[in-house]
Image 1 (cartoon, rainbow, N blue to C red):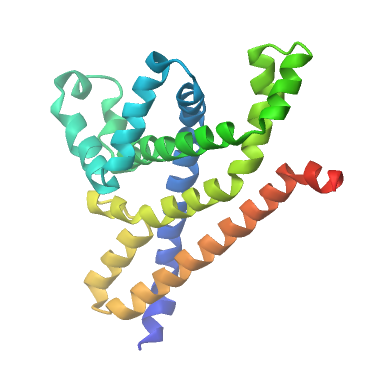
Image 2 (cartoon, helix red, strand yellow):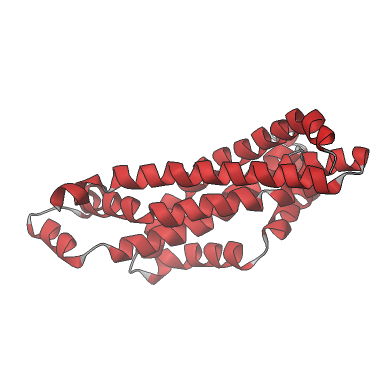
Length: 229
């Protein structure tokens, strides 16, 4: 084991880790914003309203993330109208293509998590809200969404960790995330064990930080249940 290589290139690995965290954070925010209307539509009892969200979720959950990244990165360039648009300087960049693919992917998983949580809200609470005259918008805003958000924290935390680990395929489109940076360093130093070991430790530390964050958020979201006890 050549630990001198790890020490020398550790700052470069940290640069890749920052890019990875940016991918997870930005795509997580965008994906959550997309997941809210998709999850609400999936929870609807009207078949025509939940048909399109069902197809969306089925596609993104049923196909590999790597394929989705390739479809965005290589597929967008096939449309001349996009190449001639003002968005092309951004859409031709691997970073933004990865953001788009990750956002669409995590939106599908998060929407399904939200749908399940909405279905798990106790029926008694819903009936009580209806009995005092709450409209549907008020019901979702004051009862169902707050309760659902408290319930999805453990599952959504797992989704964020899976997204962190699933960010590795972004390196296949020349993006220097943590995995991409590690592969670049290995190509120069021929020390795969040392560099991948260091990258694995960084991934582990980031996962531990995310776990602690979501434990705290879960406690904050469900603190009313502790008071009730």
